[in-house]
Length: 288
Image (cartoon, rainbow, N blue to C red; front, side, top):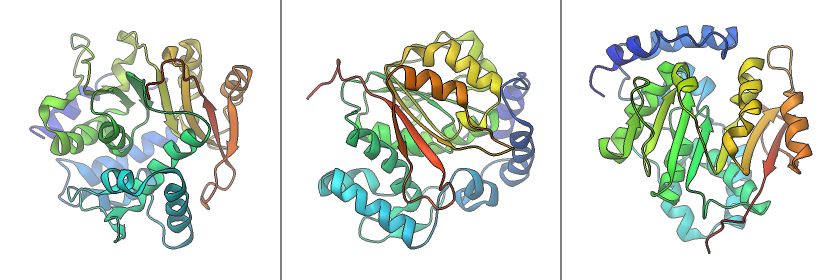
Protein backbone atom coordinates (compact mmCIF):
# COMPACT_ATOMS: atom_id res chain seq x y z
CA UNK A 1 0.00 0.00 0.00
CA UNK A 2 1.34 3.44 -0.93
CA UNK A 3 1.98 5.84 1.98
CA UNK A 4 0.68 3.40 4.61
CA UNK A 5 1.75 5.55 7.55
CA UNK A 6 0.53 8.76 5.93
CA UNK A 7 -2.95 7.30 5.39
CA UNK A 8 -3.04 6.01 8.96
CA UNK A 9 -2.01 9.41 10.36
CA UNK A 10 -4.92 10.95 8.47
CA UNK A 11 -7.48 8.42 9.68
CA UNK A 12 -6.41 8.39 13.31
CA UNK A 13 -7.29 12.08 13.67
CA UNK A 14 -10.97 11.08 13.86
CA UNK A 15 -12.28 10.71 17.41
CA UNK A 16 -13.23 7.11 18.19
CA UNK A 17 -12.98 7.30 21.98
CA UNK A 18 -16.68 6.54 22.53
CA UNK A 19 -16.45 3.35 20.48
CA UNK A 20 -13.29 1.79 21.91
CA UNK A 21 -12.44 0.26 25.28
CA UNK A 22 -9.12 1.22 26.85
CA UNK A 23 -7.78 -2.32 26.38
CA UNK A 24 -7.94 -1.88 22.61
CA UNK A 25 -6.18 1.48 22.81
CA UNK A 26 -3.30 -0.27 24.54
CA UNK A 27 -3.29 -3.02 21.91
CA UNK A 28 -3.31 -0.42 19.16
CA UNK A 29 -0.18 1.20 20.60
CA UNK A 30 1.55 -2.18 20.51
CA UNK A 31 0.27 -2.75 16.98
CA UNK A 32 1.68 0.61 15.87
CA UNK A 33 5.14 -0.45 17.06
CA UNK A 34 4.75 -3.76 15.24
CA UNK A 35 3.36 -2.47 11.91
CA UNK A 36 4.58 1.08 11.28
CA UNK A 37 5.88 2.57 9.08
CA UNK A 38 4.45 -0.24 6.90
CA UNK A 39 3.68 -3.96 7.33
CA UNK A 40 6.58 -6.38 6.97
CA UNK A 41 6.45 -9.22 4.48
CA UNK A 42 5.61 -11.64 7.30
CA UNK A 43 3.27 -9.27 9.18
CA UNK A 44 0.79 -12.07 9.91
CA UNK A 45 3.41 -13.53 12.26
CA UNK A 46 3.63 -10.39 14.37
CA UNK A 47 2.88 -10.82 18.07
CA UNK A 48 -0.16 -8.51 18.23
CA UNK A 49 -1.64 -9.80 14.97
CA UNK A 50 -1.33 -13.38 16.21
CA UNK A 51 -2.71 -12.45 19.63
CA UNK A 52 -5.78 -10.55 18.39
CA UNK A 53 -6.52 -11.49 14.77
CA UNK A 54 -4.96 -14.82 13.91
CA UNK A 55 -5.94 -18.19 15.36
CA UNK A 56 -3.13 -20.72 15.11
CA UNK A 57 -3.39 -23.62 17.54
CA UNK A 58 -1.99 -27.11 17.19
CA UNK A 59 -3.91 -30.35 17.32
CA UNK A 60 -7.37 -30.51 18.84
CA UNK A 61 -8.95 -27.25 17.72
CA UNK A 62 -7.84 -27.18 14.07
CA UNK A 63 -8.52 -30.89 13.56
CA UNK A 64 -12.01 -30.69 15.08
CA UNK A 65 -12.94 -27.60 13.09
CA UNK A 66 -11.67 -29.16 9.86
CA UNK A 67 -13.70 -32.29 10.53
CA UNK A 68 -16.76 -30.10 10.97
CA UNK A 69 -16.15 -28.28 7.70
CA UNK A 70 -15.89 -31.57 5.80
CA UNK A 71 -19.35 -32.51 7.07
CA UNK A 72 -20.85 -29.22 5.94
CA UNK A 73 -19.10 -28.32 2.68
CA UNK A 74 -18.00 -30.25 -0.39
CA UNK A 75 -14.34 -31.07 -1.01
CA UNK A 76 -14.41 -28.90 -4.15
CA UNK A 77 -15.73 -25.93 -2.16
CA UNK A 78 -13.13 -26.36 0.58
CA UNK A 79 -10.29 -26.57 -1.96
CA UNK A 80 -11.46 -23.29 -3.48
CA UNK A 81 -12.02 -21.36 -0.25
CA UNK A 82 -9.28 -22.67 2.03
CA UNK A 83 -6.22 -22.32 -0.23
CA UNK A 84 -4.07 -19.85 1.68
CA UNK A 85 -2.33 -16.89 0.06
CA UNK A 86 1.40 -16.43 0.53
CA UNK A 87 1.08 -12.71 1.25
CA UNK A 88 1.79 -11.98 4.91
CA UNK A 89 3.44 -15.40 5.34
CA UNK A 90 0.63 -17.14 7.25
CA UNK A 91 1.52 -20.35 9.05
CA UNK A 92 0.18 -23.37 7.13
CA UNK A 93 -1.51 -25.87 9.45
CA UNK A 94 -3.15 -28.24 6.95
CA UNK A 95 -0.95 -29.46 4.10
CA UNK A 96 -3.74 -31.22 2.21
CA UNK A 97 -5.69 -28.01 1.76
CA UNK A 98 -2.63 -25.74 2.03
CA UNK A 99 -4.45 -23.62 4.56
CA UNK A 100 -3.95 -21.83 7.85
CA UNK A 101 -5.89 -22.46 11.02
CA UNK A 102 -7.26 -18.93 10.76
CA UNK A 103 -8.98 -19.67 7.44
CA UNK A 104 -10.39 -22.89 8.90
CA UNK A 105 -11.57 -20.99 11.98
CA UNK A 106 -13.29 -18.20 10.06
CA UNK A 107 -14.98 -20.55 7.60
CA UNK A 108 -16.21 -22.55 10.60
CA UNK A 109 -18.35 -19.58 11.64
CA UNK A 110 -20.07 -19.59 8.25
CA UNK A 111 -20.39 -23.35 8.54
CA UNK A 112 -22.34 -23.02 11.80
CA UNK A 113 -24.50 -20.36 10.15
CA UNK A 114 -25.21 -22.72 7.27
CA UNK A 115 -26.05 -25.59 9.64
CA UNK A 116 -28.56 -23.27 11.30
CA UNK A 117 -30.31 -22.66 7.99
CA UNK A 118 -28.41 -19.58 6.88
CA UNK A 119 -26.70 -18.88 3.58
CA UNK A 120 -24.76 -16.16 1.77
CA UNK A 121 -26.89 -16.81 -1.30
CA UNK A 122 -29.11 -13.81 -1.94
CA UNK A 123 -27.15 -11.54 0.39
CA UNK A 124 -26.24 -8.44 -1.59
CA UNK A 125 -24.59 -6.50 1.24
CA UNK A 126 -22.69 -7.69 4.33
CA UNK A 127 -21.45 -5.49 7.18
CA UNK A 128 -18.68 -6.91 9.34
CA UNK A 129 -17.96 -5.18 12.66
CA UNK A 130 -14.30 -5.89 13.29
CA UNK A 131 -12.66 -7.67 10.39
CA UNK A 132 -9.18 -8.49 11.67
CA UNK A 133 -6.67 -8.31 8.85
CA UNK A 134 -9.38 -9.19 6.29
CA UNK A 135 -9.72 -12.98 6.50
CA UNK A 136 -13.53 -13.16 6.66
CA UNK A 137 -13.88 -10.63 3.84
CA UNK A 138 -11.54 -12.76 1.74
CA UNK A 139 -13.72 -15.83 2.32
CA UNK A 140 -16.91 -13.93 1.49
CA UNK A 141 -15.49 -12.59 -1.76
CA UNK A 142 -14.24 -16.04 -2.75
CA UNK A 143 -17.74 -17.39 -2.22
CA UNK A 144 -19.42 -14.54 -4.10
CA UNK A 145 -17.38 -11.73 -5.62
CA UNK A 146 -20.55 -9.72 -6.37
CA UNK A 147 -21.33 -9.10 -2.69
CA UNK A 148 -20.89 -5.58 -1.35
CA UNK A 149 -18.80 -6.01 1.79
CA UNK A 150 -18.35 -3.28 4.41
CA UNK A 151 -15.75 -3.74 7.18
CA UNK A 152 -15.87 -1.43 10.19
CA UNK A 153 -12.71 -1.27 12.30
CA UNK A 154 -10.04 0.76 14.08
CA UNK A 155 -8.07 3.07 11.74
CA UNK A 156 -4.80 1.13 11.90
CA UNK A 157 -6.61 -2.17 11.37
CA UNK A 158 -8.45 -0.61 8.41
CA UNK A 159 -5.08 0.23 6.86
CA UNK A 160 -3.89 -3.34 7.44
CA UNK A 161 -7.06 -4.69 5.80
CA UNK A 162 -6.55 -2.43 2.81
CA UNK A 163 -2.91 -3.49 2.48
CA UNK A 164 -3.89 -7.19 2.60
CA UNK A 165 -7.03 -7.19 0.47
CA UNK A 166 -5.63 -4.95 -2.28
CA UNK A 167 -2.74 -7.37 -2.65
CA UNK A 168 -5.19 -10.27 -3.00
CA UNK A 169 -7.98 -8.74 -5.10
CA UNK A 170 -6.46 -5.61 -6.64
CA UNK A 171 -7.22 -1.91 -6.16
CA UNK A 172 -10.32 -2.07 -8.37
CA UNK A 173 -12.05 -4.39 -5.89
CA UNK A 174 -11.21 -2.61 -2.62
CA UNK A 175 -12.51 0.80 -1.53
CA UNK A 176 -10.85 2.41 1.50
CA UNK A 177 -13.03 5.21 2.86
CA UNK A 178 -10.72 8.16 3.65
CA UNK A 179 -13.27 10.93 4.26
CA UNK A 180 -16.97 11.68 4.53
CA UNK A 181 -16.90 12.67 0.85
CA UNK A 182 -16.24 9.08 -0.20
CA UNK A 183 -19.09 6.68 -0.93
CA UNK A 184 -19.75 3.01 -0.36
CA UNK A 185 -19.23 1.21 -3.67
CA UNK A 186 -21.32 -1.75 -4.74
CA UNK A 187 -19.74 -5.16 -5.45
CA UNK A 188 -16.51 -4.17 -3.70
CA UNK A 189 -14.88 -4.61 -0.33
CA UNK A 190 -15.47 -1.28 1.43
CA UNK A 191 -13.20 -0.53 4.38
CA UNK A 192 -14.88 1.97 6.70
CA UNK A 193 -12.71 3.27 9.57
CA UNK A 194 -14.64 3.58 12.80
CA UNK A 195 -14.13 7.34 13.06
CA UNK A 196 -16.18 7.93 9.90
CA UNK A 197 -19.09 5.57 10.59
CA UNK A 198 -21.53 8.24 11.83
CA UNK A 199 -21.42 9.96 8.44
CA UNK A 200 -22.74 6.90 6.61
CA UNK A 201 -26.28 5.52 6.69
CA UNK A 202 -25.56 1.84 6.34
CA UNK A 203 -28.13 -0.64 5.10
CA UNK A 204 -27.27 -4.30 4.90
CA UNK A 205 -28.73 -7.76 4.39
CA UNK A 206 -26.34 -9.46 6.81
CA UNK A 207 -24.39 -8.39 9.89
CA UNK A 208 -21.31 -10.32 11.07
CA UNK A 209 -19.24 -9.80 14.19
CA UNK A 210 -17.15 -12.56 15.72
CA UNK A 211 -16.19 -11.31 19.19
CA UNK A 212 -15.38 -7.75 18.05
CA UNK A 213 -18.68 -6.13 19.01
CA UNK A 214 -18.72 -7.79 22.44
CA UNK A 215 -15.18 -6.45 22.98
CA UNK A 216 -16.20 -2.93 21.94
CA UNK A 217 -17.56 -0.25 24.28
CA UNK A 218 -21.15 -0.23 25.49
CA UNK A 219 -21.60 2.85 23.30
CA UNK A 220 -20.65 0.75 20.25
CA UNK A 221 -23.07 -2.00 21.22
CA UNK A 222 -25.88 0.51 21.80
CA UNK A 223 -25.03 2.22 18.49
CA UNK A 224 -25.44 -1.03 16.58
CA UNK A 225 -28.64 -1.87 18.47
CA UNK A 226 -30.19 1.58 17.92
CA UNK A 227 -29.37 1.28 14.22
CA UNK A 228 -31.12 -2.11 14.25
CA UNK A 229 -27.97 -3.90 13.13
CA UNK A 230 -28.07 -1.68 10.03
CA UNK A 231 -31.29 -3.33 8.90
CA UNK A 232 -29.80 -6.82 8.71
CA UNK A 233 -32.26 -9.71 8.76
CA UNK A 234 -29.40 -12.20 8.83
CA UNK A 235 -27.01 -11.93 11.77
CA UNK A 236 -23.96 -13.99 12.70
CA UNK A 237 -22.45 -12.94 15.99
CA UNK A 238 -20.01 -14.71 18.30
CA UNK A 239 -19.24 -13.45 21.78
CA UNK A 240 -17.75 -14.52 25.09
CA UNK A 241 -19.85 -15.28 28.13
CA UNK A 242 -18.12 -12.33 29.70
CA UNK A 243 -15.32 -11.18 31.94
CA UNK A 244 -14.53 -8.08 33.94
CA UNK A 245 -12.69 -6.69 30.92
CA UNK A 246 -15.27 -7.62 28.30
CA UNK A 247 -18.68 -8.09 29.98
CA UNK A 248 -21.39 -10.19 28.41
CA UNK A 249 -23.37 -8.02 25.92
CA UNK A 250 -26.67 -8.59 27.72
CA UNK A 251 -28.75 -5.99 25.84
CA UNK A 252 -27.68 -7.31 22.43
CA UNK A 253 -28.37 -10.83 23.62
CA UNK A 254 -31.88 -9.85 24.74
CA UNK A 255 -32.61 -7.97 21.50
CA UNK A 256 -31.58 -10.82 19.24
CA UNK A 257 -33.27 -13.54 21.28
CA UNK A 258 -36.48 -11.47 21.14
CA UNK A 259 -36.05 -11.49 17.36
CA UNK A 260 -35.92 -15.28 17.43
CA UNK A 261 -32.15 -15.65 17.29
CA UNK A 262 -30.59 -19.09 17.52
CA UNK A 263 -28.21 -19.43 20.48
CA UNK A 264 -25.43 -22.01 20.19
CA UNK A 265 -22.30 -22.62 22.21
CA UNK A 266 -19.08 -22.27 20.25
CA UNK A 267 -17.44 -25.69 20.09
CA UNK A 268 -13.79 -26.65 19.69
CA UNK A 269 -12.47 -23.36 20.99
CA UNK A 270 -10.44 -23.86 24.14
CA UNK A 271 -9.48 -20.22 24.56
CA UNK A 272 -13.10 -19.10 24.56
CA UNK A 273 -14.75 -22.19 26.01
CA UNK A 274 -17.65 -20.10 27.26
CA UNK A 275 -18.44 -18.41 23.96
CA UNK A 276 -21.69 -18.42 22.03
CA UNK A 277 -23.13 -17.79 18.61
CA UNK A 278 -26.24 -15.67 18.19
CA UNK A 279 -27.74 -16.08 14.73
CA UNK A 280 -30.77 -14.63 13.00
CA UNK A 281 -31.67 -16.38 9.76
CA UNK A 282 -33.93 -15.04 7.04
CA UNK A 283 -34.00 -16.84 3.69
CA UNK A 284 -36.71 -14.78 2.01
CA UNK A 285 -34.12 -13.59 -0.55
CA UNK A 286 -32.37 -16.92 -0.86
CA UNK A 287 -31.14 -17.80 -4.34
CA UNK A 288 -30.65 -21.49 -5.11
